[in-house]
Amino acid sequence: MKTFSVKVPAGIRNNEKIRLLGQGKPGQNGGKNGDLFIKINIENNKKFKLKGYDLYTDLFISPWEAALGKRVNVASIEDEISLYIPAGIQSGEQIKIPNKGYKDGRGSRGDLIAEVKTIVPKKLTEDEKELFEKLKAISKFNPRSNKLT
Image (tube, rainbow, N blue to C red; front, side, top):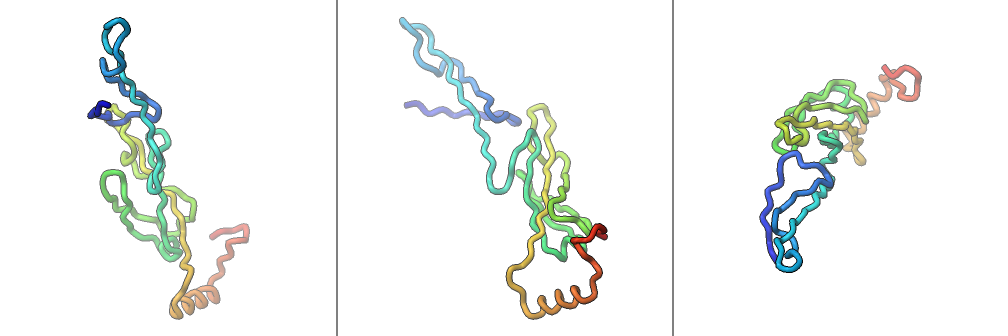
């Protein structure tokens, strides 16, 4: 069994192959070794999904962050990005962060797409519950009406 050290080029695509010249099986009748092909399989993980050159990630926010807006840190594949969430953003909306996606192998890269997911706390403190009750009493907002303003 041989071990190979292989440099994977930036921007390699799913199912592309890397060719190692002369590292395959020996040729017939004492001929040259064949080539070894390594097929690349890029798997999504819990944090990122790759579509083309764009990376998709979930951005979890609270209802008050969605309503009021907030600056948050979002992880990219290389660093953290400070991102402003605009007030009134809806769960399911996407925020595009240009040039923070997957490299294309030609010096450019795709985008990072953060999909907003508003998460409601499962347990509330008494103070939180009281504030939500006050909001319910004074708010005219009805998400089931035809006018979502």
